Amino acid sequence: MNNELEMNSNSLVKFLQKSTAEFTKADIISFIREKEIRMINFMYPAGDGRLKTLNFVINDAAYLNAILTCGERVDGSSLFTFIEAGSSDLYAIPRFRTAFVDPFAEIPTLTMLCSFFNKDGDPLESSPEYTLHKACRAFNKVTGMEFEAMGELEYYVIAPDDGLFPATDQHGYHESGPYDKFNQFRTLCMKYISQANGKIKYGHSEVGNFTQDGLTYEQNEIEFLPSPAEDAADQLMIAKWVIRNLASQYGYNITFAPKITVGKAGSGLHIHMRITKDGKNQMLEDGKLSDTARKAIAGMMCLAPSITAFGNTTPTSYFRLVPHQEAPTNICWGDRNRSVLVRVPLGWSAKKDMCALANPLESPSNYDTTQKQTVEMRSPDGSADIYQLLASLAVACRHGFEIDDALGIAERTYVNVDIHKEENQERLKALDQLPDSCSASADRLQQQRAIFEKDNVFSPSMIDGVICKLKAYNDTTLRDDTQNNPAKMKEVVNTYFHCG
Image (cartoon, rainbow, N blue to C red; front, side, top):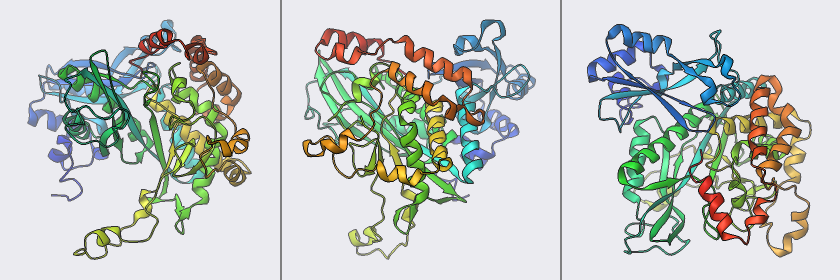
C-alpha cells in the first residue's frame, strides 16, 4: 500500500489507491459499483456563500454516465443576483477530485462539488469559484510561484445549559473536558470533514464561552493545513456544511457570525498564507522573513481596506473590528502580535531540535521546519464568501510583486508593539484604519476595483454586485447607533446570525 495514501480518511482514496487529484470518471463509476452507491449529490456555492445541493438517483449505468459527463442545468438567477433571469441557465459540472461519501445520507450517496459553465460551454467568469482559479493563475504567471492558504474556522456551539462544570467566562481557550462541553461534537466534525477531503491541522475550544437565557455558548475552532488556495476554499465550504449538519442531528445551534453579543469574543476566519515554488516554502530566507513574504504583505497592506468587502460582508462584521478585542482595526503587520492586521506567527526558526530536547531517547530529526512558516490575515470572518476572499488575497499578494516600493511599504507598516496602548498613540495615528461599516468597505472597493479587475480576475459584474449588496445595508452609523442600545444590537445580531 502507498505510504502517502494508507492513512487518508477519504474512502475513495483508500479504495482507488489514488490521490484525489488523480480521480477520473472511470474511478468514480468503479467506486459507485463496488460500494453500491445509489445516489449522487452535486453541491455548489451560491451568492449567499452557502452550498446548494442537487440530488440524483442512479437509474442505470447510462444515466450515471450522463450525470458525470454532462452535469445538469441550474437557474443561475436564483443563485447569483448579478445574473439576469432572461439568460440565467448555467451548467453545473462535477469536479471528480472533490468526491466523498456523504456521512449524513441514509441512502448510500456520493457527493461532489461543481463548477459553473455558461451557454457556450466556457467557465462562468463571474462565479466565485472560477474567480479564485483566475486569481491563482494570475499569481503564478506574475511570480512563478504558487499561492497556498488555510483557514481558522471559528464558530459558537449553542445548547441548553446543564449547569455542570461551567468554564470560566471568556477563558475557554484550549479547555479540556468536562469544562469543554462540545469536545466530542467537535472531534466528530473533524472526522467527517477529514473524510470529505479536509486537511485538518487541529481543533480546540476557543476563548469565548458564556451562559445566557438558559443556554450555553461555547466558541470552538477547527484549523486547516496549508493547501493550494482552490482546495483550501473547497475544504472550508465543506467544513461549514458538515458542522451545521452534525449540529442539526445533535439538536445544537451553530453560528459563524462575527459578533453575537457585547463583551464576548467574536469569531473570525483568520487566513494563513504561504508562497511555494517547486514544493518549497518561500516565506523564510536564512531563518528570517523573506523579501518574497514582505512583498506579499505589502500588497495586503495596500488592498486591506477593500479586502474587507469580501471578508467582512455583514453589518455585525464591524462590531467585531474594534480595539482591544484581539481583532485588527489598523492597517499594519508584525511578529507574533495579535493587535495587527497581518501577523507573522511563531515559525519554528530557532534551529533547535525541540523534540529531541523533550524526548532524550530521540535522535536529532533534521526536520525541515521552514515549511511551517505562514503569514496570517486577521480581519476576515465567517460572513465571507470564501472563494472571493481567497481570490482577493491572491490578488493582493500578487500586487505586492507588481508595485515598485513594496519593501518600503512593508517597512513603514511594520509594528512591534501593542498599538492600542497609551504610549503608542503616535504610532497608531500614523496608520490607516480599516473601514468601519459595509458601506465604507464598498467605497474602498470602488476606489481600488481596477486592481481586482486587472487581468480579468474579478469580473466588473461581480464587483458591482458586491458593492451594491454592501451599500444596501445602509450601515454607515450602525456601529455607533447600537453601542448603547442592547435591544437594537440584538436585533441586528439575530438578522445576520446564520451568515455565510
